Amino acid sequence: MSAPFSWIRPDPHGIRILPANAWIDPARPVDRALVTHGHADHARGGHGETIATPATLAIMKLRYATSAGAIPVEYGETVALGGGVSATYIPAGHVLGSAQILLEHAGERVVITGDYKRRADPTCPPFEVTPCDVFITEATFGLPLFTHPPIEEEIAKLLARMGAEPDRCVLVGAYALGKAQRVIAELRQAGHHAPIYLHGAMEKMCHLYEDFGVGLGELRLVADTPKDEMRGAIVVCPPSALGDRWSRRLPDPVTAMASGWMRVRQRARQRGVELPLVISDHADWHELTRTVEEVNPAETWITHGREEALLRWHQLHQRRARALALVGYEDEDD
Image 1 (cartoon, rainbow, N blue to C red):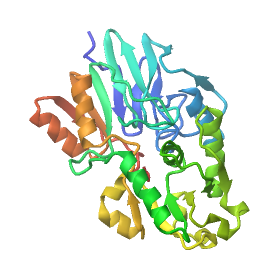
Image 2 (tube, one colour; image 1 turned 90 degrees about the vertical axis):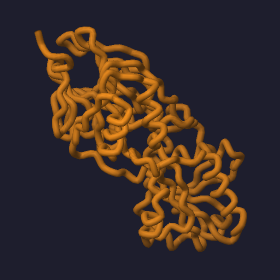
Image 3 (spheres, rainbow, N blue to C red; image 1 turned 120 degrees about the horizontal axis):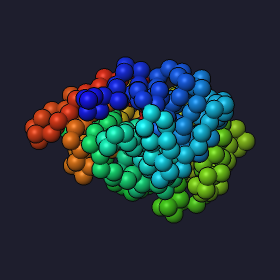
Image 4 (cartoon, rainbow, N blue to C red; image 1 turned 90 degrees about the horizontal axis):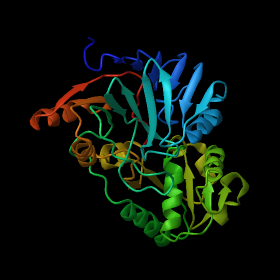
């Protein structure tokens, strides 16, 4: 008789499902990949088969030119992988198309979260708590110092700064997949319906979100807009463009950045950010620990991020846990 959960094996390059000859978010091309979401540290091209939600497959096609071997799976749909293993895709609340993956085999249940958050987000379905035996969780913000404020407060700060300096624009650095669209959608919910201006690198992904029913309001390209027209406006760009020559075409921009890492003042100073906005698409410390309590697994496996602190929390609460130390997962600009 095989040992419990011997059918799923952590590997430095991903999580391997042995009976199905498949991998979860592998860091290199494989014959069969189950992908949780479209960020580059989880989704890569070159796989023989890619099993993911329709939105994630569309994102991968746009970003990595992947289309061959795409197998779409809707939320709540269960697919047989072979070898007695089934997989069900469940909303993760991270970005458009993001999913947890519930694997079931021989009466054992394993949930792989990918990246996730617990806050409401107008651009994607919310995280769903799913009971399981083994819970494989991220720990990007797995330190007690990370407590994300309500996003409404951060959006209010952004709008207040824009209103206080009408001769300038506010330039918001935001990760091109997920964060930029969430910031725009939250601005719309807060009543800001004026045009929002985009760096050209944002345009296609914003259109993809709209194709999947996410309303972003009127968007204009900076390249097509006279400088004076952007005074008193909000401009969104990739974080890498904040200090780039491109920003010289803007009217005296107030430099802002939307990221969970803006909780760390040194990171804001290093980037020359005047207006740090603590807006994260990951669970904070309290949400990570609350999620473990709600899922209540027999064992937790901790992947990329601050593994040591979350591992210690499990020990203090008499919960079984192990750190996986997977490679290839980065501190994205969240």
